Image (tube, rainbow, N blue to C red; front, side):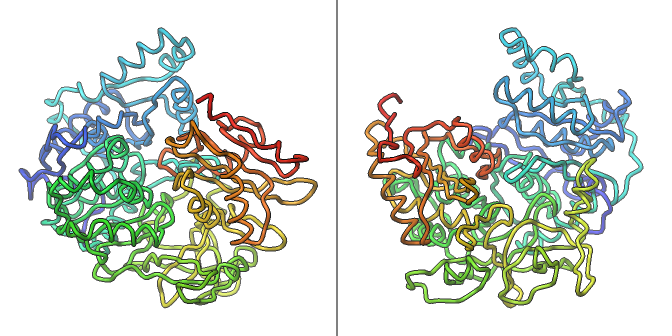
Length: 595
């Protein structure tokens, strides 16, 4: 375990101990190397940016970091520059159009800053856009824009080391907003170092490890797992843009093979993308995945079926089932909360789906008609703790009892920026019976079995119909298997109130290849049938959506609340719709011919 109190001390150590070792290998297009900065390069650039910010009197305050995906190096340099200058970096997804720039202004107001760090190229693009979109001009004028990629490197010699410690606020990560209004999570240097050590131990990283990461840096998994972990453990990480992966998921596997990576991963959807690729597209690539001994999966529910299909498809190329590493985390805990032992295969429990709706764990055989597979996400590490609570009574629950997941440890962030009530409710929970605390209330549901955590859903997304608890993600999973026209990981299940009763509604994207000749009636009938058979409830409404139109967060999480609002406002991008309140099946209509 490294004994440092700040990230600045850690990077300075790497710059002296391993000055010429590459910290990162940048693949902006997913294939070609653009740069390979060493630890010494990072330290020097960070000093230069920090010195420039200090010369402007920008210290002990907040700044927005706005960098396009392909400018990953500039983002990282700016991030470390902020840490070296005692400036709180507020991470942001890069605006792609005029409307998202308006969101940037809202983020500036929320974080109480008017300073934006970016690149010269991106700033020029925004200035050009302002000529065509007058509404952008006030944003440009109200914010102070600084292009960090043109700051003279010789300023590094003028850097003044700040007075900071482990409790100093390092950065603010805004939550993705999948279940509510985004909030600024306050993360300290100590939080980052502790969570980095937890990941290092759980993943068994060391100085000879090789990694590949494609997740965006403004996201906790990309920032802490992709940017900080190689600095902490002293190894080299190959970095590529998430856009490169979406455009061609095979670039991910090609990079792992090319750099003989040991560690890489992402949310379940990324593995799904690879599972959908026809074998003939990668049979001639000479892929060698035998070095990949830790394939972490987190940030969204881990599907047992995805793990099985992935192993089946890629074991001929050296991938091993034991490499899969399901884990659990969130921005409020810096990143990592739980994970298993690297040597172990994923643990899957099959439980009765009906009993699960009543928050009961009844184990059944995998071939049981009502079996639901739940993948274990390991245990807490170091001195961190995981407990299960009854969300209403705040009583501590035992093994195999479903309740809200509570966590504690040195990686738990300090709260939400300028939201005292929200901070107290979320970060300062105590058990009423045992008086243990404080704990972070995750808002997620799960249970412990012999110390291992199993995730079952989210409290705020549970649907209660006829006195039964229904988990949206379980229903979404069933729906997406009932007809080939339905896109995986692209559906949302929610409820609406009709005449005082909670009713089930489904919004589901259609595969692009089915749009023009979509058999709307057939697809809707298939959805209604599977919901009735699997969950014994009827459906009130079904909205079939155009490809890539489902509301999601920047990290790919389904925004069920936003989808519900759009359904009620009739603003979803529909290709077909059915409502039980319609007198007849004339409620089904087809707009595919207009696409």
